[in-house]
Amino acid sequence: MSCRVCDCGRFESFAQKEEWHFSRCAKCDFAFLDPMPDQSTLNRLYDDDRGITTNYYPKSASRHSRALRRALRLLPWTWRKSVLDIGCGGGFMVNAFRLLGAKAHGLDVNEQAISYAETRFPSCHFYSGSFQFFDANRTFDFIYSSELIEHISELAEYMQLIVRLTHLNSYVYITTPDLGSPNVPRPVTSWDVFAPPHHVQFFNERNLAFLFNRYGFEQIRKFPDKKAGLKILFKRIA
Image 1: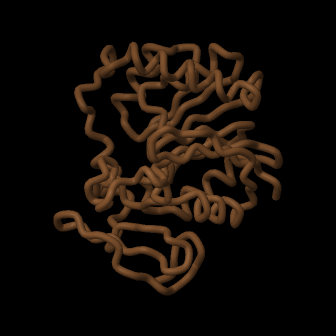
Image 2: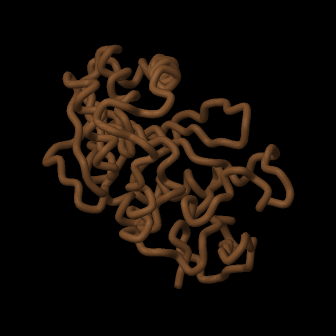
């Protein structure tokens, strides 16, 4: 086995939480659940509807206001652009991008979430299903993927999808927990986001940038985060 980020073959034991064991790459510090569940197993976890119905989504009002604030921050890269939110949930970010001038689309594995999004935001475009089987037959100017990559066991397939959905000079905005942040508590197993099997891998700024660079992207900007999170904008250059 080689590291999914840097191809190094040297690993060390990193952490144990209940029955879940994490290893870490000795070269790039990428930490991952070991053994790693397959994506179909994880998708069944994420397809839990959490009380979501066609007409109800938990905390919808606060999600809507937060989405507008986040979309405003990204306006210079999304204004009048085609945008896809991978892991869009109830479609709040998709609609926020639309309200701010983008041609907005969303993808999510949770059918109930997509049903809510289509009902609540009919002017947007939504797709239901796993990223593994998604084929939009087009590319996008901007990909938004927030708090998703830490859930993805098939990392190479996810990155290949990002490549297929972008073109030269497209932007990709990624947020994920930051294992390298000084705000990560010790021991790491006390961190509220260290939650296997929902979160199966953890990055820091260096290895996340290395991963995207391998697939033809360069880091453009890192946005500040008051907690232990990464918010990074990448641009496709190759």
